[in-house]
Image 1 (spheres, helix red, strand yellow):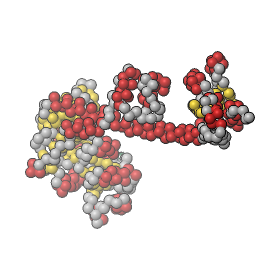
Image 2 (image 1 turned 135 degrees about the vertical axis):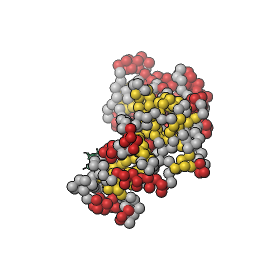
Image 3 (image 1 turned 60 degrees about the horizontal axis):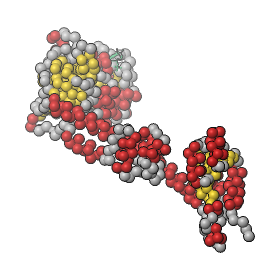
Image 4 (image 1 turned 45 degrees about the horizontal axis):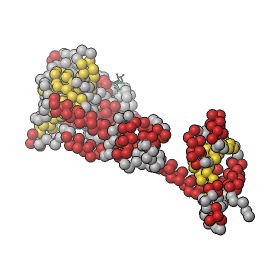
Length: 510
Ligand code: GDP
């Protein structure tokens, strides 16, 4: 951190900052190595800013005390679980229609005729008692939200392609996402009832985008369906169950629960609700859960058919009541032993967030410091250019005039823009004298300020103003203290004047 960075953080000018350091500063752009000095200065400012010298170590320590990731389950404990399926595909190809049709095909639905509610996921139980869980937020928004948080809950993607439309932009996009997430694809060729349906053409198009469909030499299953007419839906579900068996989708039903948030919302009557899909363990009433920086104790669990559940095993979903805070979709849910532990985990995760933010800020500060350093070096280069004016104190006159301080000319240059100041310095470069020393006390952009005046007074300098204003107040003050301010709007005239000033200070030639 440089004093200038601190100035930006505190939103104060360099005068104020240098006061904080009790005038102990070398240069506004030079990083402050002395941590104690920096801390004292901040304390003097009255701000409460925490300085983390190295947050990375602490981050590691916090990670170690977190509850995620957990060690994988013992293989001998694994038992089959229902697959979790996401439906994807191009807009209007029939995703929503298919989800609705599937929802009503469940035997539970048939037997109880209950009203289904949208909770973000539902399971359908077949006559064979095989079960498939569907995430009922179609499209890839939900899929990417999950992926962004590293919670890959989908086991199989059902890609819906309308037979009358074929492969479209979002079809390709869905394929790309599923492949990236390494999730197997099953294709539902929809709208086979439509007079314009062309299944063969659709398959050829699928092949063209790299999907090796089954009856064209590949291993990706395709099932022709009509979501609208509820045709062949059983074949689709059977294909899913078969696929799940092939994939050996299994989970550990014991131990602490691990799940993923699919959806979350606030209900005016029931409070904070979120739907989860269990990945591991068996969720029961009273379990304490942590999801990100939210936690809660399970008060009530319901399924999409509004049934109150006693337990939720892997591959099933439930809407949960009892959250203190609302977790976000895609967040990983973990069970902990007690509320005390839940609080501790939430605190340390909040700490972690702060530290991560500090790390990000640090990167920005380093970038800023680098920019300042470059700027500083540029200015230094200019100064060195100017250094050529310094009297090379040689020759016979040296001893004669050694103590005569009149031989030195101090100047301050203020210009309207960077370019003009640079041009002035460049032109001054052509002046070469080994007799008189010119000292550039300060140069800058903008109108003449009180600060310039103070500097001029200290160094007995002449102020050159190129195309900049000089406020009347400053003019009057300068006159009072005997400082000369010389305004110019032509560079060479300004330079000529500097030379004249220099020459006037040269000792008279005998
Ligand atoms: P989404 O945007 O992928 O969710 O598509 P929708 O489910 O909203 O369906 C878009 C349109 O296609 C609607 O008008 C549906 O009625 C119609 N549609 C869906 N499935 C079928 C089908 O199997 N056959 C026919 N003919 N139309 C369908």
